[in-house]
Amino acid sequence: EAVRVIRERDVSKPLFLYVPFTAPHTPLQAKDLDLGQYEGVDMATPKIFDGESSDKHDLRQKRRRFYAALVSSMDAAIGRIRETLREEGMEENTFVLFMSDNGASYQGGCNDPLRGQKMLLYEGGVRVPAAVSFPGRIKPGTIVEQHMHAVDIYPTLATLAGSSISEGKPLDGVDAWPYIASGHMDPEREILLNARDRRSSAIRIGRWKLVRNGHLGPTSALGDDEEERFELFDLDTDPCETENVAGRHPDVFARLKGRLDAYAREAVPALFGKRATEKKPVPKVWKPYWWREA
Image 1: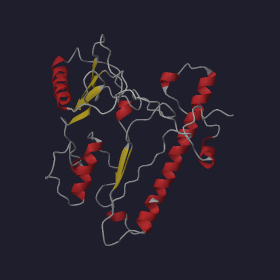
Image 2: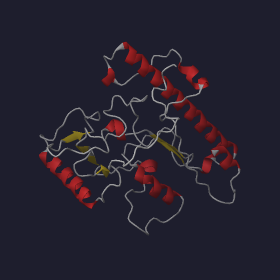
Image 3: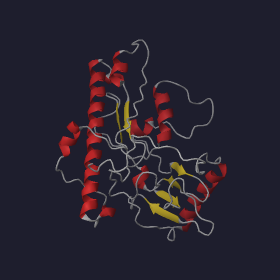
């Protein structure tokens, strides 16, 4: 569909194309052709599952092969899109951005050596790969060290397209083009990951990251008798978040907690988290244990 849109575009106008692949995602339903590439391959699995029974390990291996096959299918589709841009003579004047929206789920994915998975606020849940291509404007092989956020995409693309972002409501993101094109660094860049009282929240300022109630999922809340848990990490020296250094850096802890509390006070109440009044039927395509043979 993306190839069709590119080929049939109005050549007198600019083109913006948003292609949100559903792969890799559950339900993990890969094509036989893609699965064949991984038949018998010993796949790396998250280390937290080391020591599982052989049956569970075999099942996890199977999930990993399905996941890998989906990634291969997505990769091939992106290749077709890029090839179409070349064929249409658009490659030199097209900014291409690829990124994921969150870390991988343990249902087939693996974020090692980072801690955590999708829906958690540790780095395994929020640090994702991203790549851009803009021939003639970005030198191939360039590595951007500055941490950025998904909310930067809109102001960055708007600026590149020559649009003004100075009017209207304030934006959460910033124009990231200076980071990408010239290696500009903002060592104190503040990024909010979530801010909800008595739920999982996190904020990053430069090298420091504060996680509150990181053990909770996105819709879980602390019980009435539970106390808040805080973890402070130095991501420059500990990107895998293995050591809570809040006790050694009380000034840093207080600064980040103050900013996180301020955001929580500003946040409007969440629209989700309440129990459904009736049980919704599960679509038939969502087959539990899809990986088991009949």
